[in-house]
Length: 161
Image (cartoon, rainbow, N blue to C red; front, side, top):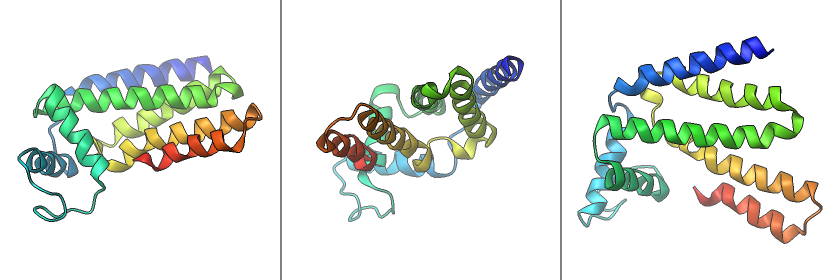
């Protein structure tokens, strides 16, 4: 099992390194454009129509504001988001043991990275972090016998995206 995890980790690192040159394609440029329109004073759903929720535009606007509009900036953000999601997956699965926790985090990373440039920054990928945070909070509050109000607060994180 350790050999499989080590090989998976090496493959994930290799794919992450190879992905640094991926261009912005598919939905990411559209979200960048809409975030730019909003930054110029435009109103989403009135001045520019798209089916995504405002949180997606806010994430893109934050990336543009902090890292810039280029391909590498978005790629670094995507890899950082992947690392955060993997860390949360590891934390969520840790009570099952170290091997299942690492397997879950690495398989998620491999799935995301093996899909190619079109999967970068997809809203479903971005949503995973919020859903995991909500599930983790609910699971931990139930395990600790916390009041239902705390579970509701943790579950509401799932809907924050």
